[in-house]
Length: 314
Image (cartoon, rainbow, N blue to C red; front, side):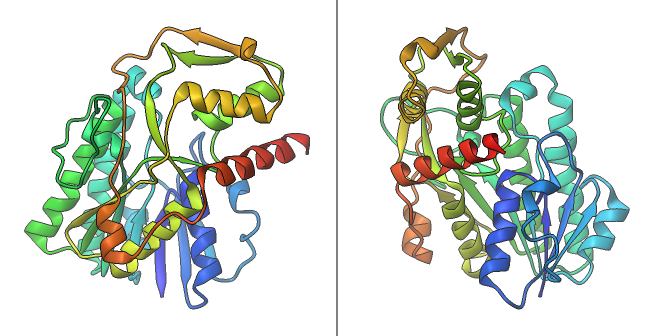
C-alpha cells in the first residue's frame, strides 16, 4: 500500500517514516518535502536504500507535484509545516502560505484523486494557553495566540470542513511538545544541548516557569500510526504524556546531564504572546485505541542527550 508523507525530511516526519518501514513490510512510502532549512535527507540516511522508500522534492503548495505524488495512495499524512513560533512572529506570511494554503492544496488533491485517508498532524498550541490547572481536551475551543498556532488552527478547521462538506476521510492529531533524535536545533532541547556542548550559555525566556508537556518522538509516531489505521474519521485525537515540566526544569535536567552548573543560564526578555502552560489530555486515544507512552521522560531525555553528544563528536 502506498503512503504519502509530506514533510518527511523533518524531525517528526523522518521518525514516522522510519517507524512505519520498520513495522509494515507491505508499505511503500513516498516522502514529499521542500527541504527548507529544518528538513534534511541526512535524517533518513538509514532508509534511503530501502526499495519501499522514495523521495520527491517539492512544495505542498505546488498543485501539479502534489497531484502526481498522491496518485494511487491509500493515505496522506501531512507533517509539512512551518513550526517555529519566533519565526512566525517575524514573518507570518510564510506560515499562512505553507500551513494554510499548502494544507488546502493537499486536501483538494486528496479529494480529487480518491485518497482513502488524510491525516493532519497538528499541535496542542491551537488551544491557546492554560492557567496552573486543567487540561486541553478535543472539545476545548480553539484560541491560538501566535501566527504559528493560528495558521495550524486554520488548517485544522479546513480539514474538518473537507470531511463535513465533501466526505473526505479526515483525521487530526494534536500533540504536545516532542523531543528526541533528529530534531532541528532551533527547538529548546537540542538548542540547549548543542550550546552547552560548545561551552556557551543558554537563553531562558522570562522566568523560565512556562510549562509544557513533553513526549518522546517515537511514542508520538506510534500514536499517529494507530490513528491512521484505526481512528474514526472526522475526529481529533489529542496526544499527551503527562510529563509537565517548566522550561527551567528542562534546562536544569540538561545542565545536570552535561555536568554544567546554573551559571550557564542566561535569562532573557520573554517572547511576545508566550503561552504560560500547555497540558493535554490523552484520555480519548488511550480509551479508543489503547495508546500510551512506552518510554518515561527520564529514559527519553537520557537517550536524546546521548544521541546529540554522539552526533556532536562525529
